[in-house]
Image (cartoon, rainbow, N blue to C red):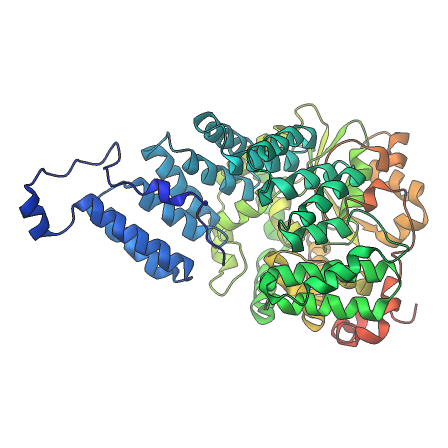
Length: 560
């Protein structure tokens, strides 16, 4: 785990009391020496020790020291702040609460606003995230981390053009800042400006800045027909173990991507496997199966129908769901090319609602108990708030698309909150779909994809859950088969738009000309006309992926 505090965290540790802390009593120097350090100094010592525990991944110990400080110095802003950092990635809601309290106690500290904004951004709460980044910059205009964070927020908010000058300004302050060096080409790539992105990534590599990440991003900017000089450089970098697990994973996936482009499939798969192994990710399949069992048992057709009576009747929300790499981005781009549709990208808002209700999977999950807490009034409130959240993005759109693939787990909740919402399920050949997941460097939320057998067994759970949702909401879920869309783009696109309840528009056939940001791994592909090379792609790896095929069982269409 990397240090969760900003680089300048030490500036927060003061030997003076904060504005709201009671000043220590004045004592004579000799008395102070006899009684030890002042309360403020003792607090600072404890918080420095808490930081050391945090860096050593001893999070409970760090938390305990922060609570000791708060017990004698209530509302200590830095203690709240460090507690917030302990929640990042584990409990973002908890992090949000502590960062908000730190900001409340010390509103003129730009770092507190920065961290609060970053946590809002993790939760897809773009408006408050942008507000706090702007506040951080008002307090400290040269805070490079805040400039980069604001750029990332605008990029995620489908305002990639607004992100570019922020990353450029960040580079004016610090030419070698990794966030700015990779952020600028990331924003350019999201806008389809791949050649410009490649120039900046090559400069980052030349400057030895975030080398693994830069190589990984560079290899995604184009399809290779000849071996690039970068491949030998990547293989050289792989001999340097100093890049760490994440860096090694990025380099292996970069090499694998190039080798796949060059049809050197066995070499490519070897790198993809090493890249996934480098991170050491594990997935508790048994725990996930029990959670799926509980969801199926709880969300019956009768329960969803009865609770949906209190949902919001709006037809604005559209949810595109399915396994990652099943065609969700392509489907969203086709829909969002319609003048009455706004594509909002992958939003984590629905997941945040589900987590707040206790519907997250895990060893302590109690799905039935959590659903029992959803009263008619709560249903109305959650639906209304979620609709307002969507409306922020496109006030006048008739349909607003959330294409978070893993919302397939939450279709029961969608059916309750929005009984008239459209749900598009993207399905693809099971082996192709799984291979496309395996060869990408996903974040830890997708650690089921790091092992071929686990990935195949996870896919079976996804399939089992989707079959259940089709029984719960018969005729409500539109299945968009990737291979059908590829084979007959116009006919399937017309079906999609008709399902949305909108008149046909020819712009939907030229989705690749659409303006706006694309922030998924498919950002290169969706800038191209539809191509068929991804269909039955798995046959290129057939000898390397038997554990996956065996795990998929009857879902693996090997004879077609």
